[in-house]
Image 1 (tube, one colour):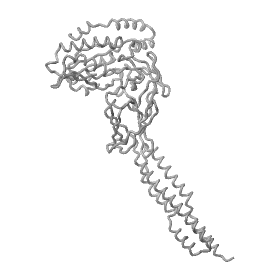
Image 2 (cartoon, rainbow, N blue to C red; image 1 turned 90 degrees about the vertical axis):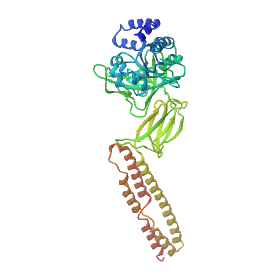
Image 3 (tube, helix red, strand yellow; image 1 turned 180 degrees about the vertical axis):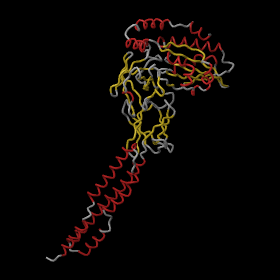
Image 4 (cartoon, rainbow, N blue to C red; image 1 turned 180 degrees about the horizontal axis):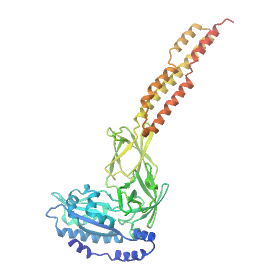
Length: 483
């Protein structure tokens, strides 16, 4: 009751007036009403405050935090936020305070099923006391996409700063939400939540051109609730802002694999995007093989491309664990290109620092690389053999023209000791089964391997004529004939 009273005393006149306007707008047809609600109603934000049980974290401090968040939100977020702070429900309070990062969506559903249907954001706000000071942490659950956003933490040694840091943590944890309205190829049209209420471009609900957007697909049941496993964060896919006018935004999609963005939106399928602001400075990229027993891929080369400038720079190669650390630097979004033996294997858009570790399942290219090594070695042998044969032929014919038949015969015998087309073809045939696979997942790789073997067989046929020795012997015999 204490927390509720504090919030009641700090009503927001501007937001209330705009909500009245929304009421008039909502009287129109269904689609227009939904669009008006999306654009002209504030974010409904519920902050659940949890203390760790330390004696200095008291009810009056909770009241101060609630009052500070309400007052500061009115100034900073203005009409875009309708924020209410209350004590975290008891069944969740200990986990929310001490294990904030580990609270699951399922736990939230058990105590906040209705809130997830009504609100836009649920924020866990944790305050803990340590011998060295106080730690304030906030973690946002977006109710539309049912996805957790990165944990934000602030520390202080002064108890008098806790309330202000609590508001800062809530603001830093907040991620603006957008609705995807239309997708044409790589061009994506979006509408900003509460976009019609934004008057301050520096406010927490604003979208700036440097923002990177993370698409999320939501599949609903007939009641409008997410299906089991119905939330899909588009894998290796991000959007960059191209044009921004009012509540409307045009973005370009960058995807490393088949994109789910082209799926048509409906009452059963909703498409959203969240601003992806990285809390960290780097992420560890881990490459593993596909399949039930993934293995690390070491020695794979990674290059980074800036989608805004098309500048490409080498990042490094994966270590024995298949790991490589990718630094954010001044590039919020990077397009990583994975190569092995010069062959491009994957294109992975990523925001370094957004997640501590990212795992990508990559086709194991070692078999193709080993086959390529064998083929290149054999092709080198072929070309060396062609050169040596040509040298023998040239010297043989010079001796024949000079009537040096014994020396020509000796060269012809040496020529006969060289490896033949049959020798190399047999080696090619013996090695081919080593690089064969019937797994349908390897069909593209197998097609490349098969082409290498076919090209090498054609090289043998073209340059190593098995009848050359007989032709030279005939030339020598004819030259020896009198007259």
